[in-house]
Length: 422
Image (cartoon, rainbow, N blue to C red; front, side, top):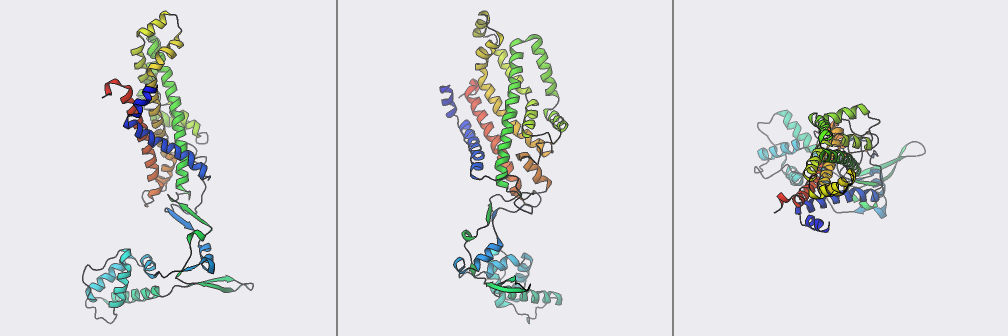
């Protein structure tokens, strides 16, 4: 055992996969201990809030009116305000006028946000409504006049008057917030950071993703145990007993092999009903439909072992069937069983994702899984409206888990399979 572990540690494929998998596993264990939040809590009233820190507007205004909590900064706020309010079409129109009638060299101005200040300064310096503007129709001239007026209005001080209803029901001025007043974000009591934004239900995607990954891993482990256990049991019996028992077991195995396991999985999941499809139920269903190739692999290994000298000696010694299988055969195929188990975990996670994409996964109101998150993102067209944070992290986590498990399996195969050793 010690020598085997040393060989595994020398395998770069196994170690890379192991580190990735342990990192994901540690994250889904540690994160809930630090952030004790309900993954299905709807913290937002809209859908697909983009990643960032959200602060209370009311608290921001209140803090800015308190002298101890407000700060005057010598920062020009007009440029940022204009960049958010002037459309790209208006910027292009301004550049077009300046190049044709303002004497500005072509290519010196840009519509980029960080160039808005320069564009506005040039416009204020060069624009003149009395310019003949030859070739420009009257409607277009009026458009430029309106645009110039709106720009001048935006450049004015944008102080905000704060009012409240008095005892007589009339609005009364309580204070004024100048456009050069700032507050420190740390002073705002109500704020929430969504590193991955929110999903279609207004739920924190990061928290939901962590819990969904944990649930999908649990499904993979349970499905792997069920599938590997069934496959190991039938494979050992078929390979060691041979004859009628082998023919019957392989007949049943071939039946399940001929019919695609995913079709059987869909039929069973649909017949169970959504309310009864919990995490454990879905995992068991996946395990019950994915044991066939493990059975065939174990059977082929046992056939090559059943006539070995140590097995024949055990038979001559009068040892029973189960003792021979457990003591003289199983230890020699233990590495292949572990490899099969690892692959079954990976296939179980992918099977759950496929089921959930079809709406046949665990009940949506009880838990979140990686497949369900993908289903929700596609149902609400996150991939069409640019809400990448609702589906791309899910794809990345599924890919990382599958990649790490397959790397571990490849590394173990190179260690345990003599034909692949250097």
